[in-house]
Length: 183
View (cartoon, one colour):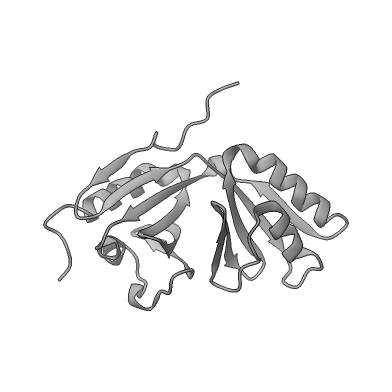
């Protein structure tokens, strides 16, 4: 069995904000119609989190459930728990039209931390961070690539495709260079 590693082997950078690539994390894309019977219970069984409302993230015990679109959720669990979470979803949604797929190795996750973490993202994303509430997720562009982020304790969590992890890390570190803080 091969050793599981994160996209960038835990790369990090300290500037006016701290940038850390975190992981590996277990991630499941769950596609299901809103209001599907048992959907909330399935997400609860797989993650311990409540089903998030539109543009929201719920967290419980180090696990996350994020609303990604009207029929899509991103569930984040410890890497070793993906199969158990998929089994819980399958059991709760048996016989109903849904799709639950392990996308752990297709994503990279970063933390942007510090008092001025929002400066880093304001330079890269066309989103109004001042209007972003804690627990609200924003799907947008990070420079030229797709990404999603939300604010949590001490900073932001950012998810992107693993194939662009190096590019995103470069963007984040460049944006967090000391001396380049926003006014």
